[in-house]
Length: 295
Image (cartoon, rainbow, N blue to C red; front, side, top):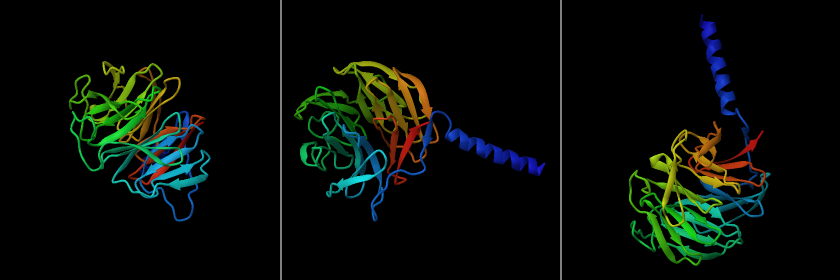
């Protein structure tokens, strides 16, 4: 009887391990050949350049690591520390957008790392009505028009839209709550091919969809856990949603779940895809960057 119980426990563990790697995806055991003396150091978020390189935003200096998809190290840069490095996006022209969650800044860098724009006021907090200051910015996304959308969500409850030259346009949301159009931690945002603004409303366990006038259109709630992580959208509007708590990634389209990548581990706070459709996740708490490949 005792042997049978032990066998059952062993079999359950094997099945659980297989389930973690089941489906269409495989989490690689390791990725990234860092130079001697360097470590991932609180990798918060990750993004992909138009040329296909992977850029990791870190809570340490140098702030940025650049690698090829095969894991070869290209360079590091950024010697000025952030109080709390949080989000990174790279737009279609290769400009790099970084958010500092504690110093309440959004910074735009040229592809070669030169600072060209700053939104927000360093170390100063603005409320939900502020037009030039944030309080807890989490993510930024640049529309094809060049307009800039900031998820100002850790202490505020809104999305702020700016023109391509940084001039205030409008506030979407601005009220903490769970009604349509309200937010409780807008943590990530993207824009689809139809121009719709898609926002991960993390603590409300939903994604809200707006048109670019700020009108609420619909919400999606079919997730394994809160969408408190990253959003990535492909050219055909396939949406990837990472879940820190569930350690999973939901793949969906038009609000319908197509696939779920389970057992990714590492509390996936950051996420991007390369040109081959492989997924990269970052975990600032576990000091890790992982690559997930399609089988």
